[in-house]
Figure 1 (cartoon, rainbow, N blue to C red):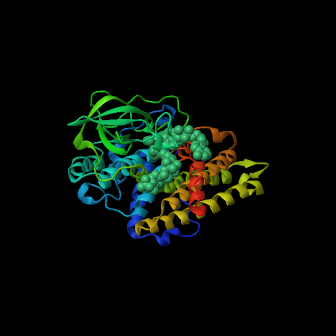
Figure 2: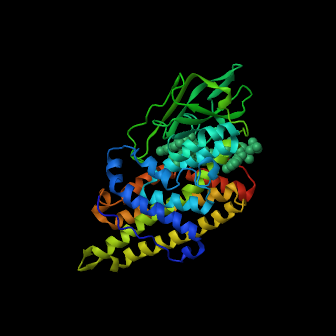
Figure 3: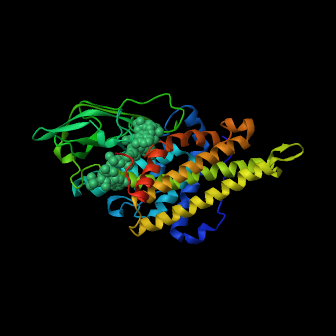
Length: 392
Ligand code: TGC
Ligand code: FAD
C-alpha cells in the first residue's frame, strides 16, 4: 500500500461549525485510520479477511457506542461526533465503518434503549471496550426490504423461549459473541432477543465470494431449537418499530460515513490528475476532468451540510426517520457516483489496489443496498411528502 496522503476537503469551511470536541474526536479517528487502517486494508480486502486486531483500536477511539453514556462504557459524545467518527472510518474502508456501526447502533443501542438495567450492565461495558462483539439479525432469506414478513419465531416454553429460523447477510456474524435477533412470538409480535454464541443449536456460517465489503465478515444466523433464557428478551420495546428505530441510528452513521468514502475518492483523483501527464500537460488541465472534479466537490459540500444539519436536529431530538432516509440515500448515491467518476480519472491505474477508489466503489454497492435500498428510501420520502404508502 502506498503512503496515505489524504487531505480532507472542506470547501465551505464546515469546520467553523464544529466544536473543539468534534474536531478532536474527528482528528483522533483520522490519525488512527492513517496509522492502523490504511497500511493493511488493501491486503485485508484482497484476502477477504476481517482484520480483527483493529477491534481494540476502534474501542480506544470511541467508535463503539460514541453516544452511549459513559456510565455504560460509551464515550458520551453527541451525534455530530458520532457522525464524524463514522466519516473517518469509512474514509478508510466501508467494512471498518460497518463493524463500528453494527456494534454501536445495532447492538449497543437496542440494549441501551430497549434493554433492562441488568442487560445494560452485563453487556454494554464489554461491547464498548471491544471485549465482546455483536451482530444484528433482521434480514431473512425471503424477507429483506420487507422485514415485517419475517418467519423466525419464538415459542414461550415457560422458563425459556425456543428460537427457530434463519437470518442472512449478517455483518460480523461469523465472529460475534452475541446477536441481537428479531423474531415473532406466538401472537406474531416482533421481539428482540440477545442470543449468545455457544447456545446449543445456534450457528453462524460465513458467506463467501463477495466482491464488496471484503474487509468485513458477513454470514448467517441459524437457529435450530435454540433455548434462549427469558432474561435475554429485550423488554422495553417490541413491534417492527423496535428494529427500525435502531436502523435510524445506523443509517445516520452511514450518511456521514459515505462522505468519508467520497472524500477519499475525490482527494485521490485530484492529486492524481495534477501528476498524470497526457498530451504534454497534467490531465487536471483538461476541461472534462475539471468538470468531474468540480462536480465531485460540489456534491461532497452539499452532502456535508445536509448531514451536519441532520446531526444538529438529532442532537435536539427533532430529526425524523424520513429525513434520515433522504440523507442516507442521497449520500450513498453521491459517493457511488464520485467513486465511478474518480475511477475513470485514474484510467487503468484506477482498477488497481494501488489506489483506494475501486475498493470504495465496490464497497458502496453494499452500502447502497443495506440498511434499506436506494429505492426503499426513495419510497419512504415519497410516503412522507405525499401521505400515500407505496408499500401496500
Ligand atoms: P410500517 O408499517 O411502515 O412500520 C412498522 C412500524 O415501524 C414504525 N417505523 C419506524 N420506527 C422507527 N424508525 C423508523 N425508521 C421507522 N419506520 C417505520 C412505524 O411507525 C410502525 O410502527 P407501529 O407502532 O405503527 O407498528 O412497516 P412496513 O412493513 O410497511 O415497512 C416499511 C419499510 C419498507 C420502510 C421498512 O420495513 C424498511 O425500512 N425496510 C428496509 C429494511 C432494512 O433497512 N433492513 C436493514 C437490515 S439491517 C442492515 O442492513 C445492517 S447493515 C449494517 C452494516 O454492516 O453497516
Ligand atoms: P430485496 O428486498 O429482495 O430487494 C431486491 C430489489 O427489489 C431491490 O432493488 C429493492 O429496492 C427492490 N424492492 C423491494 N421491495 C420493493 C418495493 N416495495 N418497491 C420497489 N422496489 C422494491 N441485514 C441485517 O439484518 N443485518 C446485517 O448486519 C446486514 N448486513 C449486511 C451486509 C451486507 C454486505 C449486505 C449486502 C446486506 C446486509 N444486510 C444485513 C441485509 C440488507 O439489509 C438487505 O440486503 C437489504 O435490506 C435488501 O434486502 P434484499 O437483499 O433481500 O433485497
